[in-house]
Image 1 (cartoon, rainbow, N blue to C red):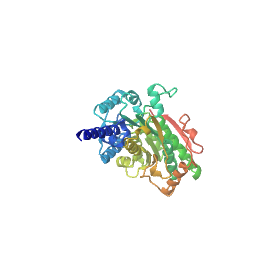
Image 2 (tube, one colour; image 1 turned 45 degrees about the vertical axis):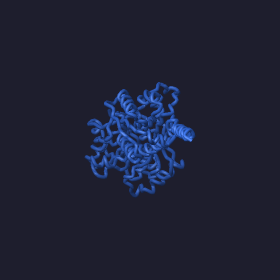
Image 3 (spheres, rainbow, N blue to C red; image 1 turned 135 degrees about the vertical axis):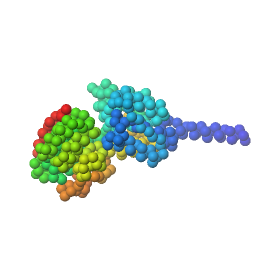
Image 4 (tube, rainbow, N blue to C red; image 1 turned 45 degrees about the horizontal axis):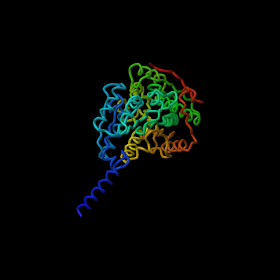
Length: 381
């Protein structure tokens, strides 16, 4: 009898061991072993942009799911320091690394294959970013490791929504202030031009768009001076697209009662809080939080293998605006020219293909316009 009981115990323990093998194959084991680390690009978690949104989404998810979470900030804006923070997180036992922004590409390439048992989740790191960092941009021959997933976004779609909304709301003197002319920012700008162009064609309005890049992702006195000139010259609203560069647009707008359009996240509270209530017309948003929630749940459920090894482009997945990975902010200042129902109708037309948006970054801003006038001023700095 004792031998029988001992044999049964061995069989049970063996079955338990087999059920738990295979990395993230079992959802219970994946959840129990899961520790989430977020690494900031080089900014802080209070940047009102990618870092803050990603941090808050990771923390909220971890709190709700009783999963250990921490964030790591590199000592400087360098690949070496980003690598160091990834290594530090792994050394401390974190099993999931979340990284926001294209700056992570070299650090990912240097670490992802070294730690095959760690799940790497990148936000807004494109195929070109990764292949270029790997040295294979000429032929895109690097096969992404199974422990890497990156989400990129169709910025041209929410950029289009913002441009369309601005003109429909009656603004005819527009500006686009990009950070640096990296593909994501360019797509935002080109979508903005196309949306404004479509609305101008529908309304018959004469629309002008001043178009420039600050050549950096933060505002300063030089860029503010350029924005002063824009607003003094009649510009009514500027789409400030690129990290902290909105500060220059906001400072200039505050002097003349101008307006600003935010980017990436709902920036109304930040911009209005700093520069005046009601300044932010809308924000063209990426679904960073939605992506974090989706992918961390995927890891928790032991299904990361279904997503790993790919760069996925996220955009419209529904006729319902708030269900999409690109959208306008809930704080949008809807009005008679562009109501919430108009917004829903626009999204429906974009989702079903009635409206298409060009995402070709090899052309010029003016090439996206048929009736609006685009005044391309290149780089401010």
